[in-house]
Length: 324
Image 1: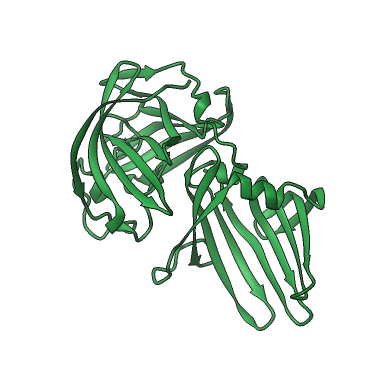
Image 2: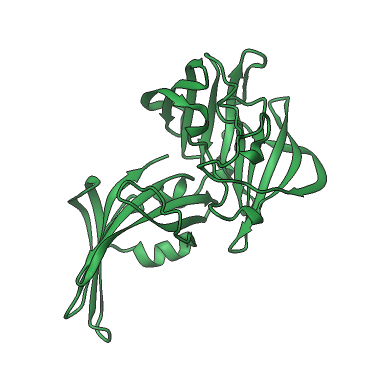
């Protein structure tokens, strides 16, 4: 099911607060999203939420057990019509270790401003704490509400377009709150990897005369024809190097179509450390620089990239991928 979220009131006082990314150094204050708290801590058995991700897919989280700060829940993925496509139960997860449907900018605490706003979901008013920041000229927002279970996120926006939004939820106090709105206007045109906030690709970088290194790419915001993502050094598992500097990048639909609109080959199966993928292949030659580049792309995700010169060879290979 889908719903439309409408702003009904806006408190003009903005507060600049520090956000501490995981790991949290100070104990989160109950009810304070800015300190790292979220409603997984207060969720109870039977609570559930559903989200639309870019208008193309959905997520449903349902609590099956909650005790002593540990949560077991059923995570389902849904297609655009709301039909279940996969299901997995996650057991005994610490409430503050569960990934939410949106995250604040990594090591950019000083950019985050907080305000209050009231949204309405099928006649139910949701009093929200709103985090907002601008990177690369794009304003991103995350709306949180204490009355929404399983994290508390209501929606995320990028460049004025909703990228993730709450479609329905259930708690004992509120019952089921849901709507039949389709949210067609919010669908993104980006390829699958760039269509969902939280998608992650971990790449191994190797080559002539260099030690192996690893790079993590994570989609941080999605709009209709653009997506923001970060690149940061990490280890093989994708754990970010705490000393590494995160780089912000933008992928637009127009640039994607220009670069990857006409593959050299299609439907090519390739096996890498992350698994087996069916890819489009792109080959380019820079005669002036004496460089040949071959790329394997699957549903927008970078699977492999081979760069050859007369004397060197550099390889980027996908070792891990996480679809949100």
